Image 1 (cartoon, rainbow, N blue to C red):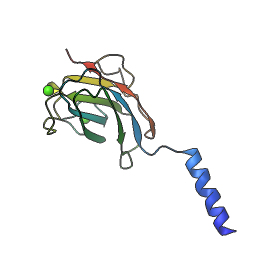
Image 2 (cartoon, protein in one colour):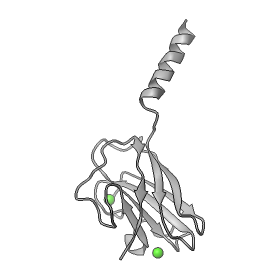
Image 3 (tube, rainbow, N blue to C red):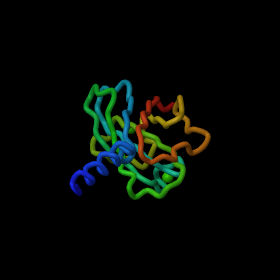
Image 4 (cartoon, rainbow, N blue to C red):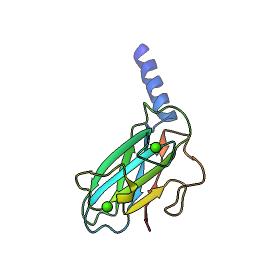
Amino acid sequence: MSLALAFAFTACESDSDPIEGIQGTLTIGSNSSGGAYYVYLDDDADPALEYGARVIGELDPGQTSVSYSLDTSTVPAGSYYLYAGYDSESTTNMDPLNPGWWEKIGWYGSENFEAPVSRNVTELDGIYDITLHDLP
Ligand SMILES: [Ca+2]
Ligand SMILES: [Ca+2]
């Protein structure tokens, strides 16, 4: 009896909230050299100042998209920007804090390289796909 109840409770819990943290697909576009990608959940638009959560990963040459996941378990509730950078030379992950070194950037909720007008991510568990755009 207690085993059956425990199983039912677990099944119910996973049905109601199957996603832990933020995850999604980054569409990088052209990428001849590989490089690094960075994803930030951040309450301002500057990675050099503090951020809520970050993930760093590497791309293979020619790889045009990648799945990412961001652990938000220690991030306080609030509203955030969610953005991703691509740095073509940074296979050693040298400059994640300096968008001046990035070749591309993408923001959840923006159609171009500019930040959305306000912080637009408040649900910290879910699927967020981001398309990156060339920086001018
Ligand atoms: Ca920041
Ligand atoms: Ca660069």
